[in-house]
Amino acid sequence: MSGKNPGFASATEVARLAGVSRSAVSRTFTPGCSVSAETRRKVLAAAQALNYHVNHLARGLSKEASRPVCILGGNLASPYQASLLEHLTRSLNKYGRAVMVINTDDGEDSAREALQQTLNYRSTATIVLSGKPPSSLIEICLQSGQQVIVINRMGQFAGADSIEIDYSSTMNEAFKLLVNAGCQQIALVSSSARSPSMVIRETRFLAAAAEAGTQVSLVRPGSASYQSGVDAARELLSQTPRPDGVFCVTDLIACGFMDAARYEFGLRIPQDISVIGFDNIEQASWLGYQLTTFSQPLAEMAEATCELLLSPTADRPSRRVFQALPVRRISLKD
Image (tube, rainbow, N blue to C red; front, side, top):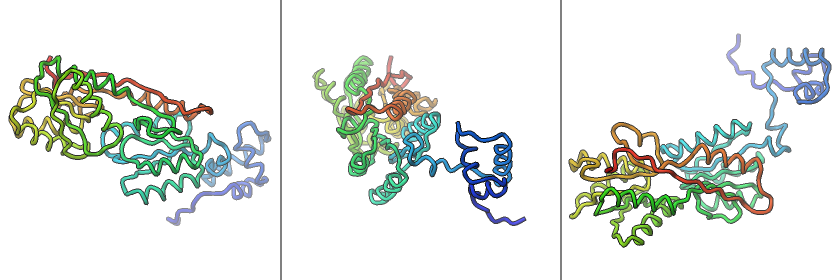
């Protein structure tokens, strides 16, 4: 037996083996089409023998519901983005939609080339994750006439549907949690990655503090990474007075901050310093962190994305706003 991969069998080969016409094969695999029981039996037997599969992509390029959906995102290995991607693909699979994922981390030129391929395949829509995908790529999708759904991009694109978090109320609550925990010296660890969601978390938290007349120490040590949290702790905890309450714009930053606070500065959490994060990634619940945070309803956001995809509004873009609810754990004083 040869080890050579024979490739995909064609409908013509199935018709030849079954002794029927090419159109009979097509009718057999098209729901609702009329075909005799004997012809169906011959075609299915031949298809099984040849390991034939219908090419739904080629068949459905003219049908909106059969076209693939593009997901555009960067930093996909991070816990939050990986979880969001998982929820989106699960929801899209549930509705029978094929998915093409473009990772923008290899640079704009590479992503632009990949995006052009999705347009060649007549992708029906592009979902843009929060974070790094550059605006120019999103503009290409909009100009092509695609439906574009952006997640946590804060109304950046007038022609796109939007899935957002109500950051004003959420950041007010994050600030009040630290105040109610008795924190006197509050710090904010933000990110040098000036993505829309990072910027709005920072600005809304600072606005809540300003309204209360509270001075907040702000640092932006780097990207939204674990190492940035470590670097922030080294900077803030070397100061006098050092903070006794810290809000980190992501959980991953918070995890790095907590480890450095404990193992480099010998601080107890929450007795010496309270820490709050954002996103409720899996690591936030680990015994080593038990991080108080805010949980984005990713399953509901993914479902809403699919609803916008399946029933787009013709007159104007839609905007869905969700609440990120607090999840209290032991990194915050009672």
